Length: 69
Image (cartoon, rainbow, N blue to C red; front, side, top):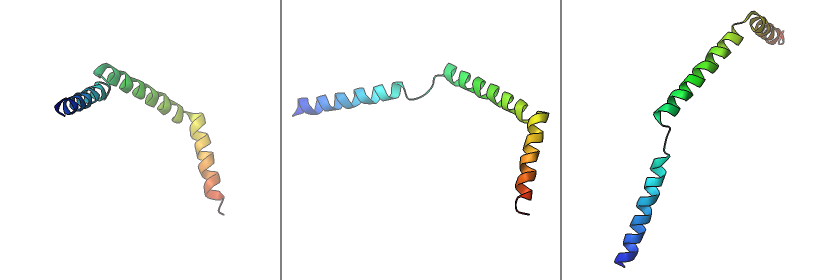
């Protein structure tokens, strides 16, 4: 019985170590994710604040507000 308990405990420890190995991103992956997110945010800000998109958004809002009248 002692061998069975020991084998079961060893299996649980191995599974816990394997799960911990891939538990999260390493620092370089985290930094690259932040850089990509900031780049996307800057691009999105440029698009949304452009004159063409601003006029289109204003037209959409005006149509939505006048639809009930």
